[in-house]
Length: 120
Image (cartoon, rainbow, N blue to C red):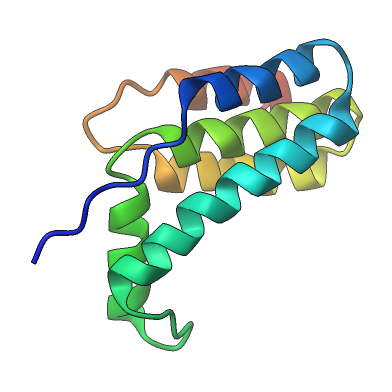
C-alpha cells in the first residue's frame, strides 16, 4: 500500500524563512526543528520504524524524505543560519544533509549556494 506524502504548509516554511531573514535565528531554528520533526516522523511511519543498524530502512527513510524538496530546504536554511553566526562546522553538517535530501530530479541550486556561502 502506498502512504500519502506529508507536506508541510508553505506558510510555515515562509514563516521560518522570515524569522531567519529578520535575524531571529533562535526562533527560526525552533520552527525549522518542529517542521523537520513532522517530516521525520512521517518517514519513520512510512518505513515502519527506524533501526539505525538496518541500511534498508535508512535507505527507505531517505527515499521518503527525498520525495519533495522540503527536508532539503529545511536543512539548507539551517545551514545558512549557522554559517551566518560563524559556526561553519555545524553549517557544513547541515549542508551535507541538504545534499542528501535533495530530490534527484531537482536542480542543484541549494548546493551551489551553500558552497558559495561556506566558501568550499
